[in-house]
Length: 297
Ligand code: KPL
View 1 (tube, rainbow, N blue to C red):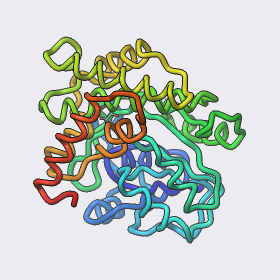
View 2 (tube, protein in one colour):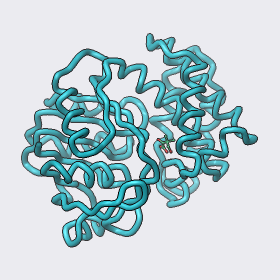
View 3 (tube, rainbow, N blue to C red):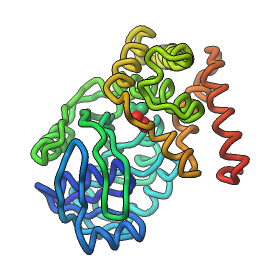
């Protein structure tokens, strides 16, 4: 399969590097990362040890069977614009937060698939990425309808050694993932603790309540996930990624803009009459930090 991985951050580099074992991949990112990959391939360390040789570029190719979008959620409109001239059969959003699929579908003609991912990744020197935990990728249509295209993409990911499954329950999967990110990301970024510190530490109630609020909003929006399931999934992920630094904490440490708008901000903004004070507080604190550093207006 010809695959364009749009976004060479930590997850994009890991997934693109892995897919290149089996497919013809172009990893689209920025220099100096792109030049380092052109010169020496993608070097993956940690839970996966491999060096693979995708093509690397700063702009997308003219055509691909599949575009895997891995940019931060606030860059999704720019990704849709950059991919608009690329002839594609399918687009897969492999991103944190909710709302990315709608943004891509509004700007692109190809069908857009949704995914959740629990692989852990951390970018190192240009051309390198560390896999901090083997997780699982779940792929399906955003509305949960059956799709042979999604099954083909699952088969392509699996053939490259990525643990991947097909789901016809993506709305539930996406909201459960949102609950996990709402519980873990801002809390660990503000407290500067690894994910595992949320299991029984002083902030475990904050994480659990943010996840519960997310489940209540999901149900109001017709997606049936229970508060218990949201807290259970949050604890399972915190345990499985106990030593990891969440992506939001990585952003804060790198003084970079975070995905707060698509996570706690999304919960707060779509809550309507459901009270979500914990999500609102977490969103306000991270936004205040971004504002102070000139990362948002
Ligand atoms: O998705 C993640 C993230 O850091 O963004 C979790 C699951 C919390 C793992 O760190």
